[in-house]
Length: 210
Image (cartoon, rainbow, N blue to C red):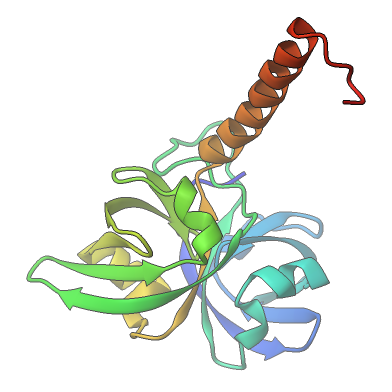
């Protein structure tokens, strides 16, 4: 479990088809083999720790649903360690389970912030609502606006300086994780609708086989 508050930007030292070596400093202070680490929004498991870097393995599920396979030597990544019970929850509950990849459509530069418009896969739009939470490359953000096929988020100077979103350009890909509350609400609704249907069928004498 994470909060979406990025602790530092790491540098990819080596990237293969199934493993990443990431140079870092702050997150290494208490890191152990087997710890969970959020890398650009994806929850990964630390397989080894060195003086100034750590390794994580990439499963096929992660490769299919994230942009991590595009990382190369020198790429920057957002890093956050798993949250502990003695920390304030400054963002929102982020699982590190990336739903899919979105594309930056436009970047609107302002005096004090930056508005980024993102197009997610169409299947994710139903979970996105104005003023709701969303995690972009592991960063907890608030949705400022939506339309039929995209949504926008506002980035303040701190976010631009301390995460990789400050260097993103139009056309770049980002990892998207929808708010976990929307995920559970959909599942509950599926069961509620199924129960209502079965009650209707029983009331009017239809068998379950139909």
